[in-house]
Amino acid sequence: MFHFLRRLFGRRDNQRRQQADVDLRTLPAFGKIDESHRAIFRYWDGLRERAADPLEIWMAIDNDPEFIGDKHPQAVDDGESEASRIMGEMICRAFKVKAFDGSAGLTLQERLALWSVFCGYADDLKKSTSPWPTPPPATAATPPGSSNGTTAPSLVSG
Image (cartoon, rainbow, N blue to C red; front, side, top):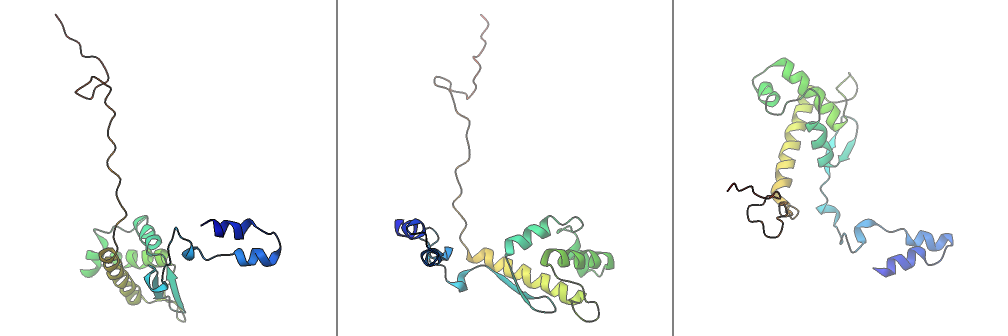
């Protein structure tokens, strides 16, 4: 671990600094992450292949001003055109793709297919990754001599 710091701060010439540039995936704290194990979602945007962090996409979907996850996908399946419009626009915003304009972009059907593929990918990713350890729930501190967890002395009339 200190070898990395020694390399980084040891000599100040350009050659030494260039050698100190290190890929974060090789640092001991991160371990060695094989490229095939990275959770990167890859998709076609109508012009080129794109790569994105699935959590960023999920947060964009979750924070979309129009899209309601419990309502719109089912409404699209039922054939509602307004729900299809809302989902199509949400997909453009979340995945940073453009609607087909005659020469480039994704058609509505392709955007809905992108949504479907992403949902399957996210579901598979959720099943294949182990969650981070969850800290124990926070509890209120009980002062010494108190058995009921209150901090005020009990009033006893007598």
